[in-house]
Amino acid sequence: MQQPSFVFTWPNLRGVVAGAGLVILCGCTATTGEVSGQDGKLQSIIEPSLLAAAAAAESRYDYETAANSYRSLLQRHPDDGAMTLRLAQALRYSGKADQAIALLTPLAAERPEPAALIQLGKAHLAADHLDLALRYLDQARELAPGDWEAHSAIGVAYDYQGKFDKAEAAYREALRLSPDNPTVLNNLGLSQAQAGNLAAAVETLRKAANQPQSPAQIRQNLALVLALSGDAEGAERFARMDLPPAILRDNVAYYRSLADRY
Image (cartoon, rainbow, N blue to C red):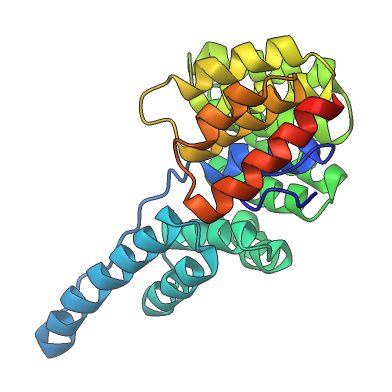
């Protein structure tokens, strides 16, 4: 049976945890310097176009194209830390974690601020450098103990290590700081699924999916966990919310096979 082409598949839920919690939010805003004359007029046209192209690419999960747009913007503003974070995130999402690490390491050394440290920690997570990931994420948490994203990313790191109790504690702290945050709820639900608590995972992912502006990834993760719980109809219902017909057909067939298997 062909595996679904939109969502991550069991038993590789470790990849789901890392992917879903880091795809949902960006939190970076680009800044541009003042320009003048004809070059300034040209940049006033080009730069919003590049930002719009990057946003459009991200909306369709085309992170390689988004990275190209951010790279062009960063060439114009090499000291723009926020643009560096956006490019690093797009690189990580497109499977180029090593490039993200190379980009972020000097930034974090020069400006050891929580946002840069969190993104660097996530890049090391994506590259399977767990010790380095935890080092940077712990540093970010110490600098900004009220930053939910640091706690959530630490939870992901613990999930990678199979330390599900510690992961849940980290997610609970993130939720205390940011109640009903769909990213954290998604990560917690996937952690519970990895730990074998599918009933709790379904409940948590339902709550995540019901949050305003909850993205498609969460609904499809819920569909996957419903299938693992034996609820093929529920899985199909959520799959139909977002997927195009060709992908939907393959995913529904896969979910039915999972429901029968588990």
